[in-house]
Image (cartoon, rainbow, N blue to C red; front, side):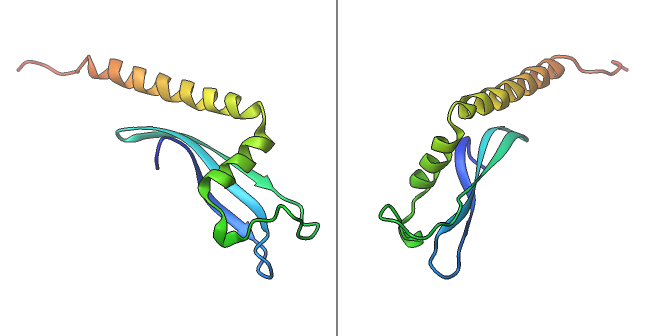
Length: 105
C-alpha cells in the first residue's frame, strides 16, 4: 500500500457501468507498519445524465475527486488522525530501539 489516498475498489451496475460505490483508503506506511482508514462513498442511481463518465474512462484521479467532494472538511480530519497515529507509532518505536534489555555475561 502506498502513502496517501488511493482507490481500492469500485462497485458498478452491470447493465451500464454506473458507479454505485467507491472505496478509498488513506494510508501512512513505514517499515513493518501501516496506519490506514477506509472511506466508502455511495452514489444513488437515478439514471444516466450528461455528466456520466463510462466506467472504462474513469481514472483514479476522477474517483478520488468524487470522494473528496463528498468528504468535504472530513478529509482533513481523517488525514490528521492517521498522520498523528502514524507519527506516534514511529516515535515510540524509535524510542524503544534506544534501549535493549540483557546482561553482559
